[in-house]
Length: 461
Ligand SMILES: Cc1cc2nc3c(=O)[nH]c(=O)nc-3n(C[C@H](O)[C@H](O)[C@H](O)COP(=O)(O)O)c2cc1C
Image 1 (tube, rainbow, N blue to C red):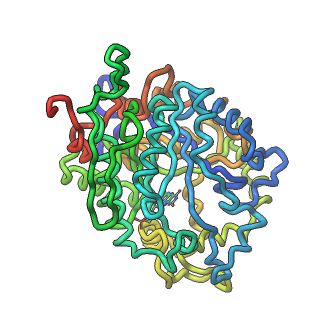
Image 2 (cartoon, rainbow, N blue to C red):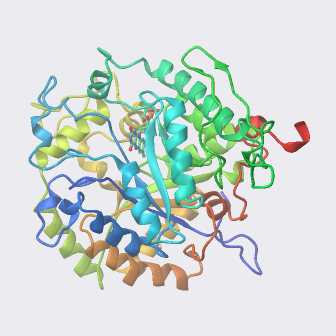
């Protein structure tokens, strides 16, 4: 496959690498147990000043802060319904509501975007559309929505269900959820609806707002959308499902896709498949940004980074890690021998991810694929190789110790990537998430995106 970085002989056109900081608003996010590392400040996640500090560290060093989310405790390991293994290591528990952190961070940044995860299975489209529009206003267009369908049985029980909707039904509901949102965001208010005209004493023009009257299988929503149009209207849409249904949904709706994957060949195949599916949907496949995941430990030298990594490992909470794995796979690993081949017996919670893992990996020890350890040069080489080999556009990078690891990112990795000409961090005001990600400075959905068919233009008035 042609390298996206080195195309042509004379002046190689270099794509701008997309880098997001992958976070959770809780004490240990990707590494159960790391909260107790003496230099780690993640336990301050309930202090607004902590998030202000994080936002300032990320500004001009990342495209976005990506906040993952779940709606219940991981309770499959050593179960059933046993949430105790997550407590000591703070394995994605406790976890606050991510949306409320954004305004404080938006106030101290100009170009950082905020990607927040929200579930189409448990949210109501009217209220989620309202919250995202509010955030799009308060950030001046710097909001993305990571659309998930959720995978934990514990979440279903928190929302009045005895068990989760089937995988198929969750994606069917997600598709209708998006249709309702497009109608609210794109079709309920005309561009020039807000006139704020003191002469005629009208804030909003009486013919330029309308109900949506959506009547579907899962949702009935009358509208109109209760928030006036924001800069992007539809927030930049991100998705991370990897099953057959998840890929079809992503190819239709997502503007950026977060891919699972453990080796070049598997990710390359996924990249080609997703771009092909997008083309079948009538979309420009090159306009969809594909992101891998990488856990990074940096040092001045490779040896220093390796030493740091080994030190971090001494804080690992094994029970918490097994609890996360149990929730992701739907499989209780209690009692399974370390060297046993994993047989995934239960219904895989994150179907696509499990399919990808189990296709190539006989045991958990090989799950180390996601880490990049070393000096800036070593990590930048790994990043470039991933891009050359797979055709992805960027990464969600996770770090373990805050603020140290984020400071190392700014000190070591950003200058290295910038000097190679592959990363130009977003800077300056007035750029929306969509404009930055797609590199075209356009705030609104592209015309080939299915949400665009709901746009209400003044020509129709
Ligand atoms: C890399 C990756 C990251 C994800 N992050 C989240 C998350 O933060 N919250 C969540 O509820 N689901 C998350 N998911 C789950 C998916 O969005 C999706 O709901 C789940 O994988 C089930 O769909 P699938 O069978 O199509 O994969 C993630 C999935 C992948 C592959």
